[in-house]
Length: 96
Image (cartoon, rainbow, N blue to C red; front, side, top):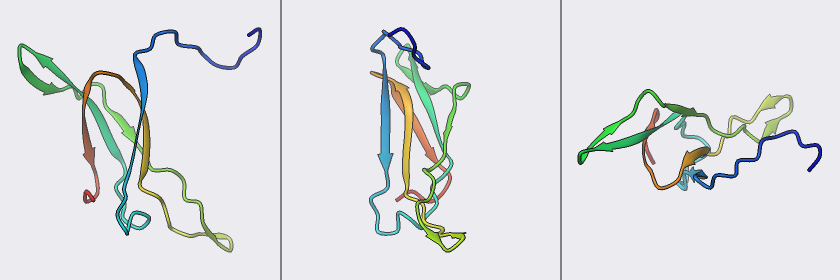
């Protein structure tokens, strides 16, 4: 491509992690922000690497009540992660 507003990564070590709440109250219960941290294993001991924390917010709400927001947000999250690694996921709200 001669012109492209982006970066192409030839390494196949990254993937997209997508997860969402499937509960009945998924649009009303707040889970955000969610923190995602890689788990390092050294000599068989697993430790969470808190120096590489990715804080994820929910998607924007998609309903309106006139000029006011509908206060309905889906519990849906997406992040770029390194494949073949374990991650620690911490929720701020109550876990579904």
